Amino acid sequence: RPVLVLFRDDFRLTDNPALHAACATGQPVLCATVQDEACMPGGVIGWWLAQAAQALTTALHNYGGPLLAPHGETLPVVLDLVKSFQVTDVFWNRRYDPTGTKIDTDLKAALTEHGVTVHSLSARLLHEPWAVRTGAGQPYRIFTAWWRAARELGDPGRPLPAPPTIEFAPIPKPFKKNLAPAALLQPTLPNDATEAKKYWPCSEEDARTSLDNFLEDTLEQYETSRDRPDQEGTSGLSPYLRAGLISPRQVWHAARQAQARSGDHANTEKFLSELCWRDFGWMQLFYQPDMPTRNLRSEFDQMPWQNDAEAFTAWKEGRTGYPLVDAGMRELLATGTMHNRVRMVVASFLTKHLLTDWRKGERWFYERLVDADPALNAMNWQWCAGTGIDASPWFRIFNPVGQSEKFDPSGAYIRTWVPELTALPDKLIHTPWKIDAALSRHLRFVPGTTYPHPIVDLKQARAIALESYKNLKTV
Ligand code: FAD
Image (cartoon, rainbow, N blue to C red; front, side, top):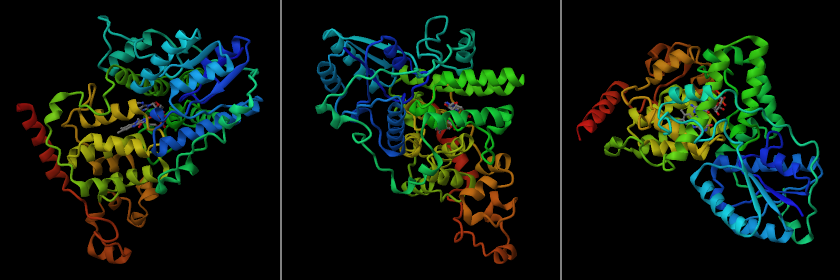
């Protein structure tokens, strides 16, 4: 009798504890991904997860077996598989989002009632949400304290190898219609994001290549290069981590090995701490499942957001007249990603200069990001807006011009995404409205026509933002 492995956001063979444990039983293995609409996001991330399921299908095929991809609600679909194949055990890697947790809890109860043994394993994070706690047994509220406590637990366990072979259970005829790739639902990308395909090859090997290249070429400068959108200064791993094409343990231990080779300390530690923000975000979502929709600091419930529809559209389309903001928003539309520093700048600009509710920005990012992650997106938006628990204070308002001059000094990043500014000299590229009449004629660059005028006055908008918050505190 076979055992069943369920794949969800962990579309990999290496360091997959559920698959590993299933193979270790010595029984035939049935691999499945249930296409349950309750767990399938739309937008670019929906497309990316479907690509990842496709990549897993190919990887399993190379092992000589199939991936079942039945559609429907998880509970009845899995019960049907279990009965039809006379499955003895079901294996999965744990989820921590509210929908996934509820489905898995109900499923475990139903399977147990049917005499099936459930094995739920830890694979998604380095530290599960409840693993790192304060002395009083509470979840941490501050990352640095969490990180200090997490470090004391030592390095996480080593990643598991891919199974050498898999003995697949035979698939009877009535189930052949459920076989991937034919059975995989293929969400269509929003039309103007089809370009994302060019930027994101999707397989475990591609994830590993990104990691290896990063460790080889970039890790040693990570502390400074991570803030430079004009350089390839980060790992580019977030979409692969999101779909589980690579595990955080693989990333952690590969970075440690690179550290041992180079003797570098500061850059590796910085990188590992960034990787751990991922765990911290998931810990926050686990304990505050409404984090994507609720101000964690309730005084912000009184914030007089202006929510100007035209300004929001200009922000989404990269037409605010602030080059760094527009470059980031256009990068997002084209590639499904945006550099972290620029994510912070555009989020600060939307919430503070445009006084737009952070939840609108959070939703737009979630629709468009190839790494859209319910915990990390919500935590970071709340961080930028100042509404989160360990957040940047409201009065820290990024100046998009200052940030641009500091982190994209030659304007290389801006030129990549805002081609109408290409001809401007480096100094003017951050403030195109300051061009003088003679140069404007010479370059045929007409402020307001070639490129939009700034949609807000930074000084005035900043004063309004600060005043709004001051009034809030006295409510
Ligand atoms: P690297 O610098 O190479 O970092 C390695 C890994 O560490 C990342 O892949 C990621 O898993 C983790 N990490 C790095 N920075 C952060 C961070 N600030 N918070 C949590 N984890 C981090 N990241 C997502 O994966 N999904 C999102 O939906 C998301 N939304 C964001 C929204 C806003 C407003 C902001 C400011 C940040 C958001 N981030 C999100 C975090 C960060 O921007 C991305 O993780 C990072 O840009 C990914 O690039 P990288 O893999 O090259 O990062």
